[in-house]
Structure formats: C-alpha cells, structure tokens
Image (cartoon, rainbow, N blue to C red; front, side, top):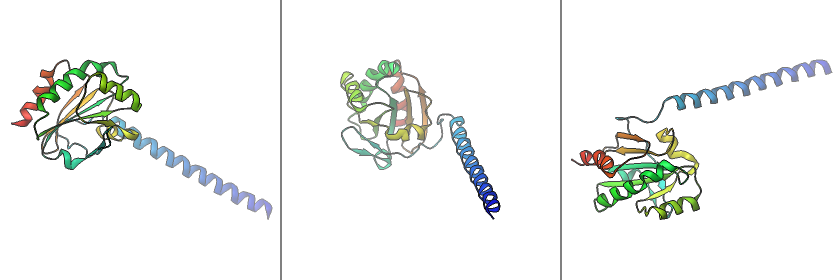
Length: 180
C-alpha cells in the first residue's frame, strides 16, 4: 500500500509541476507578445487612463474628452528629458488659457522628491504625476523616455515623438493643426 500511495503522490507532484510550468510559459508568451507590439502608433485610439497628480488631483478620460491632449512621459534622471523641459513649459504657457488643450506630464520610474525637484528646476506648471506601477507607460507601450503623445479631440493618437523636442515650434507644429 505504501508503494502505491508514493506512486500516486509522485504522479500528482509531476502533474502539478507541469501545470505550473505551462502557466509560467503562458505568462512569458503574453509578455513577449505585448513587448513586440511596439509603441502606440498614429491612428490608434489613445488608451484611457487616470493620472493622479503630485498635488492629489485626478485627471481621467472625462477631463481629456474633447481636448487636444499632449502626454509627455519623462523622468528626473533622464538627461534628454531636461533638454525638452523648457520647450514643453513654454508651449504650455501659450496654450494654458485655452479650454481645448491639456498637457499632462507622466513621471516614469522615479522618486517623488526627485520628480518635484525636477518640476521646480524647470518651472513646470502643467499637471504632472507619477506613473504608479508603470500602468500609464504600459498602456502607451513606451520604449524609453522621453516620449510624447498627441491625442486629438476624438481620443485618437495623432503623433508620437520618441526622444526630446528641440524647440517649441516642433510642439506647436503638432498641436496647432489639431485645433483647426
């Protein structure tokens, strides 16, 4: 009897090990599939998300509806992000009074104190918040920072800037046509 019970336990142990291995392989396959899709591209619907700002406000799809939305994903440790910070803030100042344009900064894999120092250093006043658990960057399928996404009033992605902007004119060249 003891040998028979040991054999049955051994079979169940093997089945459990195989089931766990298959589950793990399935998870790896899903992650590989996601990573190979690349960043969002022009013409795709922008993913719905909610950004909780450093001040505690929540900005969600209802706040973005009917607006041209610029989503800039950045980090305080990112040197190219520093290169575009002034241009982004200057562009924001030109559109700030409009009800139909919204800039959102999404701080990627950072600490809050460092992020707040970065915002203060560059005088950034448009809404910014942390990418909690990297959810937003996963929705946009980013490859690195900085990346900036321009979304039209209908929630459709119209342009993706991978890397830093070199001037305010580059930013305006993407926003202005969406306002007409």
